[in-house]
Each structure stands twice: as structure tokens, then as C-alpha cells.
Image (tube, rainbow, N blue to C red; front, side, top):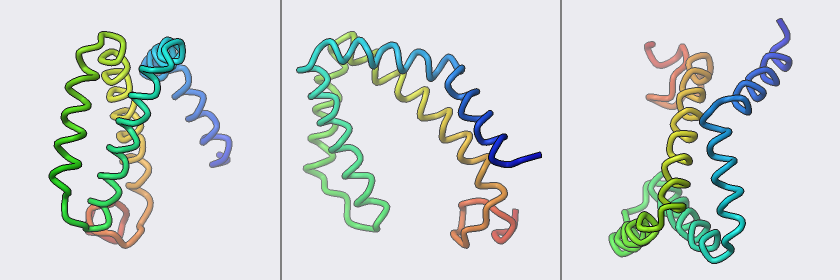
Length: 120
């Protein structure tokens, strides 16, 4: 078994999944509304920045957290944005599950990240 061939099969399986197809379909609808696309991109950028700072062990900025929550509340009122956020969440959960499966064989020396070296 060639690991690279199997990785390509995995990417094909992801592309054929309902989560991916739905996410892509809604993403195309979003592209037709540049203002909504900009708002969603701004929301995601703020969300990623907050997650990155948390991963680096920095104190959670309450103002940034409230701003993200406020933006989410505004976006969730738009049916297309709400659909996009739900599809993105389902797709992200699937990718996270795949990542968790892969990390079972990887020992990065990071507690809680899977692999043979952490007592699993």
C-alpha cells in the first residue's frame, strides 16, 4: 500500500462527501453576494486570530470575543450566511475527525495529541 496513493484517495473521498459538496455549493452562492462574502471573511479572520492567540497561550481578549459573538449574531440572521456557517461547521467537524484519526499514528510529543508516546 502506497501512503501517498491512499492520501489521494482520502482527498477524493472528502471531495465526494456530502459535507464538502454542501459547503462548496453554499460557498458559490455566497460569492454572488460580495458584501455578505466580505462580512463572512471578516468574521472568519477575527475568529482565526482569536483561536491563534489562544493556542499561543495568550489571555483571551474579552472585547474580541464579544465582537465575534456579535458578528455571529448578525450573520446568523441572514438565512444564506446561517446556512454557510452550518455547512462550514459540519465540514470542519468531519475534517477534525479525520485529523484525529491520523494523529493516532503520529507522535508529536504533545500531550493529548495522539500517538504512541502519550499512553494511548
